[in-house]
Length: 339
Image 1 (cartoon, rainbow, N blue to C red):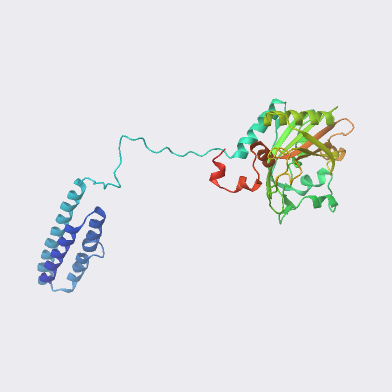
Image 2: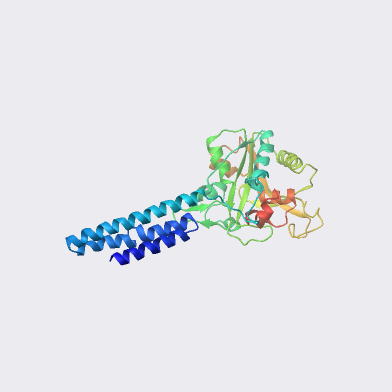
């Protein structure tokens, strides 16, 4: 057994000497001194020997273990004193400044949302918020869209499987929620995400960011609406923008309008964004329907108002001449880092 142990000691010292790094040395140490190492197994084997032989072999085994441990310690100190030598490819100039840490920034739509909010707040509007998971009552019934009404087909709705909940299809439910808890006169805008189960293309997405506007007083008209919208576009785009109002239908406004602007991507010449018409529909608008006032607990004979809702995504497309709405949520840093 002593011959075997002597050979083990010679082999261990050779491997320790050959170790180039601390990691290499750790592997050698575990091989011979670890819980399942060569010497540990040898110590366990002593139990099978007679007492006299066990004492003799045990003493020799302790000596071998001590020799190996000492050699490992010396090698460890040697490795610790070694200076790191850089190859030509790894060398660098310590006098050069380090790389700049890349810091993230706000998404384009978040930046634009804040700008829109600031413009409307300067015109006396407050910002109101509402839930994205909405009830059928606020999303439809309170807005004069009762169950089985054909107007519900306008919105391709994401329904949830319990308690008649859904992902809101527009920000208009906040109109009723706000008027329930605040007395007119009032001016509010409602920013938030809306969801519609529809196919995506260059100008349509299943998730949109919408800005709702509501103004209620005793004497407001479509003229007030058009003046506010014109002032908003003037400040947002920093230039005069042509607008167009055409009759439309929305159950919660009467009369209702389709509000469009001349396409700023192609300057009205025609492109895939405006579908070669030169105009881009930016908002639905109209005078608040009396039944919406009634749903909110207000007397439609005393109050009147107008509302609008436009897509923030399309505003960004016009402002920055972006021709595909899908880019906003693509996660493509080549696009996002431009803003």
